[in-house]
Amino acid sequence: RTMRFGALQRAIPDISQKMLSVTLRTLEEDGYLTRQVYPEVPPRVEYALSALGESMRPIMDAMEAWGNNYKNQG
Image (cartoon, rainbow, N blue to C red; front, side):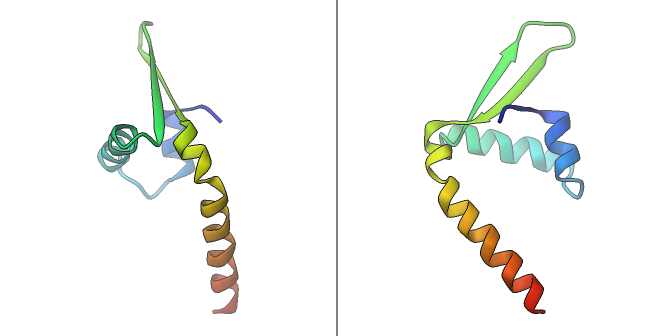
């Protein structure tokens, strides 16, 4: 789904603002995210998975399931 920067930051509480910003820029440059800037005051910026990012969803879901299984074994 589409998310704003603040919502992403709240969803990943242990990440710094700078690291989140750098990561989002890199994912956008690599084509995994789209970034939409709305000309408002204050500016509103929304991020969403691109088609390439969506194509990776099954891989990410499998990695999440593996991680949860591994975590529960420990």
